[in-house]
Length: 445
Image (cartoon, rainbow, N blue to C red; front, side):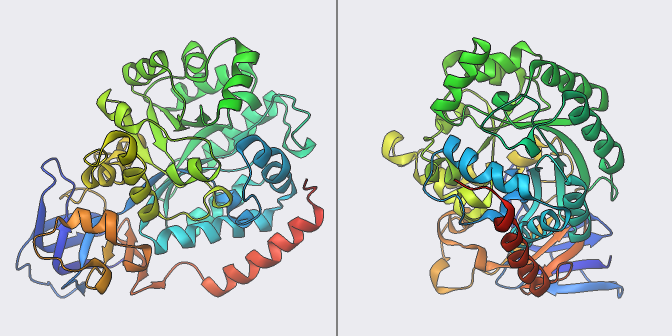
């Protein structure tokens, strides 16, 4: 890990004042130690000349499925429950250790090259240790966990149906191995899939274990109307009300989607400090609906962004999610709704709050982790730059192709477009071999 001096940059700090400054950033080890103008090198630093470049906090995506990256293109044009039953569950059941590793690497490569530095990831039932190995090798920051599915379901493959005690024990074993790994870069999150796939005893024990270990719980809720009907039939309650009934609704809970909420559920989310991961690309492609993010922000509900999985998006690109999060609200709520700064905030410091690390990541400030991306906005599609809000340029004009450098903990994972911790050619080759093998054994409808 080299000490680094970034010179002559436009710096989008996302500090409390949301200052935008022009100058230099000094990084020592994994921390930002100085921000200013005219900083001089001390001889033992890697100097990056960022003239005509923009430095941003690395994006924080709070809902990802690395285990599904191999399934890109295999779940198109289906609604949620058919998408799960006919494609995703059979393919997840077919995963082996090698396929899960390369599925994770494929997703991480895409995330790093598009400026994402932290993810909240939900894996599948088996082989999760291999996803953690990929996360560890790649250098990305992650909260991850094995998915938990202990409720008997005739629509789910036998390989995805667990016994309650076994699911809990394997989760704890993975937590004790990986939580805090790499100086805290990797953390564990208990990951019950959703209410439909989990028994009440399992969810109650997840609540207890989350409190005991002080770790997050990451699950889906209220993504689809059909899902909500099933939950109500099973529990007599709506999703968020049921999770609150079990004691899970608190500041450690990250809920993906929350497209369909009633007023009682919104009050619970606000009052309990629950974090919501908005996934506009996935919600649109699966025709799940459009979450009321303006209403949630008005009600002071914590919001962040995620791409979800590759087979329901079909990319993991935060630029795409930011733009969608802004524009899909404007026809209904007016052009000033979900402005560029609001969605950029969700993509950075909002994500940091969701993972409980706002004092370490999500903004560019002295004493925080050096989790950064450097963008080249010196191009036709992002000009003119004169008298234009730089955050507007990022949200509405920039693309992932504009990301030149990505670093986590002061380690450069990509520089001038070249990956440093992942062998792209190997991953692409093995990804194709892996999905070919899975398709030979999965029972797809």
